[in-house]
Amino acid sequence: MTDPVRLHGYRYSVYNRIARLALHCKGVRYETAEVNPFAELSADYLRLHPFGLVPVLSHGTFSLFETGAITRYVDRAFDGPSLHPETPVGLARMDQLIAVIDHYGYWPMVRQVFAQSVFQPLDGQAPDTDEIASGLEKSSKVLAFLDGVADEGQILNGSAITLADCHLAPMMDYFVRAEEGKTALRAYHALSRWWDQVSELEMLKVTDPLPTRDN
Ligand SMILES: N[C@@H](CCC(=O)N[C@@H](CS)C(=O)NCC(=O)O)C(=O)O
Image (cartoon, rainbow, N blue to C red):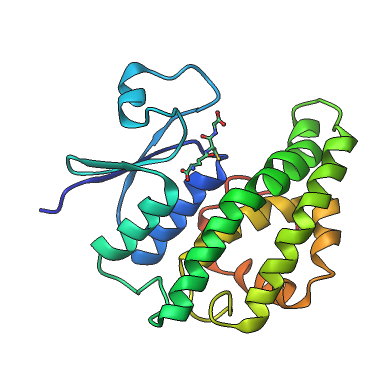
């Protein structure tokens, strides 16, 4: 009997979806526990994640937060297809890409462009257009970097799925649901080709938190 795997996460969280993608790619069976990090968190949850974010992965008595650590753990701890390149250069590129989207991509692409252009109106609120413009401006350097990586082909090559695809896809999916994001992506041809291929994969469809998308 294997130890149970549980993912504590929020259904709309891109980081939760990154962990789900890695678990899905490895074929790991897991249960989910819904935690809204924007609401008041229980003392039990704060013991699992003292910084009060999602997700947290538990595997038996072992628990882990920080999505990059979670997905690397999932890749190493479970059978199933490898989710990392084999060469030092490919691995370095994957680690670099994950750091870039965490540090420079998430906020402008998701919390500025997507949140203002898509989520605010869904919530009956007017979007803050200055925030969208600022997010687009900050996203442009990130998109240019990602386009170069896709063009180089070590990772984001649309064939061998790695943790880089798992990390980037949920953020790109939210970004292009904003018309402004969809338009911005078109200028980056290698990255657009990557997205055209990856957005059709089953792994994205089964983890889609907003299944009404039309892109
Ligand atoms: N560095 C964290 C980031 C996780 C993160 O930002 N999660 C967001 C949801 S996508 C969250 O919990 N936000 C709650 C908040 O900002 O208060 C990780 O890699 O897991």
